[in-house]
Length: 303
Image 1: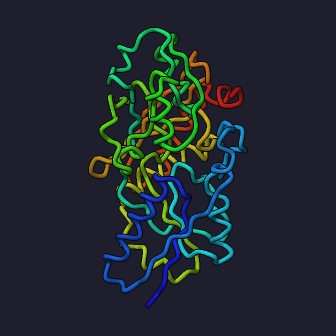
Image 2: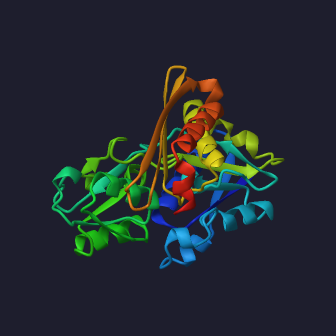
Image 3: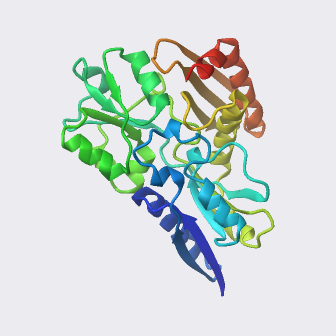
């Protein structure tokens, strides 16, 4: 019987995602054994350091990919938004499963909508992208950095350390905390991160395990994520810069909404580009070009 070793971070969300992949493999009639191996990344070790100060690309994936290259694990399960645009030589994304809800959400103790928050409300988020878009919408808000796993952030909210949180709907839903969602934020308010809600199932390019993972792949999600990641790559960014991108596939038409914002919220560039699903990367490239024409390069250089 083939044994598949899955490498994962140890957070509740990472384990929920990896256990989902494990369950799919065990139920697939492939006749495999599956075990999880928890790997601590630099992003997990340095929990008191703002994410953007940790070196950007790969802070939640580097150590897991190194274990994959050393043949200590067979498969890595990542949140796609944590994965840099360029993969290490010898590694491939073998499957992109169907995406969970990619939207950002507002979480408050009293379920107050963003528009109804009192002036000066303190909002916790570790994301420059969220900070920039929230301030562009409401200059009166006080945005403070907050890190830790989902339950840690919710506890800080419940203790009154912050007045509200902006988080990913996908994470809350995957660990059974969807009841805490107070408001889903529309694109006009906060465009989500590149590949938010999507998983990346990574393996070695020459691994025989690759064929075992093919059934997990979702073509629609792959097209959406390809457009978003192409945009990110063209802008020279990573998952810790004030870039938002949300692609939606309707039939064969792929529409990408993207923003780049100044971290203080004073300036924001926005583009909406459509194209055929088969040309997803081209859609992302054209959106990046439009943003650069509007001055996005200056905003990214000033972050």
